[in-house]
Image (cartoon, rainbow, N blue to C red; front, side, top):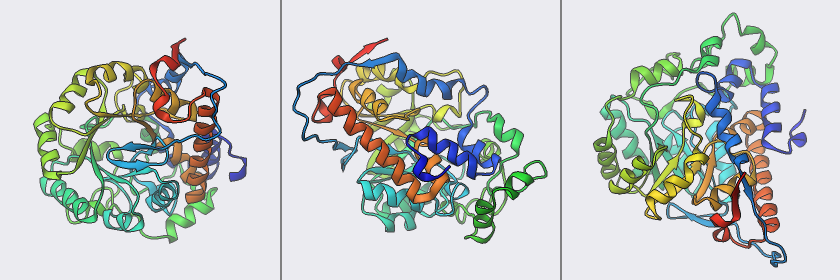
Length: 382
């Protein structure tokens, strides 16, 4: 299978599985416990049907919008995800450059494999930093200050990861950061020579945003589950979020909101946006899908805050359904991580191009010329 054979996100998934050692692929693809919530994140979109109009004169359409104060060419965000150099040697650089080409938002994680400063220097496009609150308050302050200096456009505080979900695929494979070769997975690494040679002879794997504070995960191999359970601050609360918003002083979002009550609290502390997200089903298995919670949260905040629907997005029609249900934009991680793993920047650009074409085609078939015409009356529950 080649990149040219990829015509949807699931095709990129198959190509990534073909090219990655199985512990690395399972880190991307896996989720918590029985992975029920991960599956629901996508299948939830099937519960709603689109209602199209015709004869609408759709020769010219506009897919652009404003997201967190910046212009975006598409109502789509490439969500921040960790450890990207484990999937392809170019990691976050490839994603940043692909996002810049299409004029869309992207984010990098606290556990990014390229530094805040390096990514900021690559693009003037809209960029977001995702903050994990560590027990080390000096590290939290350092990352915020570095983002301010580097000119990041927004900061998103992840609020659903005070402890790690039970990611059983990673427990079985022994996946760590940095990745290490184990007896059980050695054959998989040996039969993926392109990945293995890039990893062994490429730039040293590291997590530069943790420099000077944390050795685990960069110089010292550790499982993601152990990292979260030992390094992150389980005492984080609404006062913490309000303080971080004040320390940051710029556009501020909360990522991981799933209840209407929490959405209202986000409004009350002055957040600019919320990401309805369950961390890709990687935390609390058995929880609701973001799309299933969207209308309830939209009604609760009544237009007082931007809403990004995060999770399970695999099609342009998923984006359109999210917008019709009241979201400002949709976002996802796996939708581009599979493509990154499959073919680096070329893969990410092809994946975004496919989604762009699906959004444009879907708008024309829906009879809308701008995304603000996507309203609740365009949806019916199955």
